Image 1 (cartoon, helix red, strand yellow):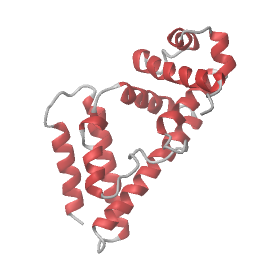
Image 2 (image 1 turned 90 degrees about the vertical axis):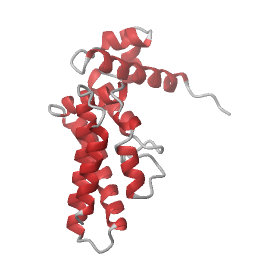
Image 3 (image 1 turned 135 degrees about the vertical axis):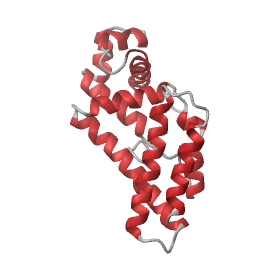
Image 4 (image 1 turned 180 degrees about the horizontal axis):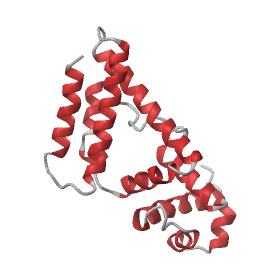
Length: 190
C-alpha cells in the first residue's frame, strides 16, 4: 500500500491541532501560532501546508462534517436506516457527550455568523441531515402529509441539537431522555 504524502499527513495533523485548539481556546482564541504549537511545527509550516487561518478553518469545518467519501453530508452516521436508529444516535451518549467535537462544532457555529463559507458548510450538513430525517420520518409514517414529515424532521433535529447544546452546562441526567421523549411525541402526532 502506498504511503500517504507528507503534505497530506501534515494537513491532517494541522487540522487535528486546529480542532484541539478550538476546543481548548474557543474559535476566537484559535490563532495560527496556537495551532502551530499544538501541531508541533512552525507557523510558517502551517501556512505552507494549509494556507491562511480562514482557509484552515474552512478545511476544518469540512473535515468535521464530511462523510466517508469526504463530502459534506448528513451528521447521521452511515448505515442509519430507520427513524428509531436515527433517534438512538441523536439522543444517545456519543452524540450528546460534551466533548472536543461538540466544542469544535459550537465554535464553527459561532464563526458561521460572520463567515459565509463556514455558514455554507454547516448549512449543507444540517440540510442533508434534515432531508435524511424527513425521508426516515416519511418511511415510518407513510400516510402522513409530506409537509408534516418535514416539520417533524426539523423538530427532531432541533430537539437533538438543543440537547447537545444544553449538555455543555446542564448535568441533568434526564436531559437526553426528556429530549428524545419530546422528539418521539412530535413523531407520534403524525
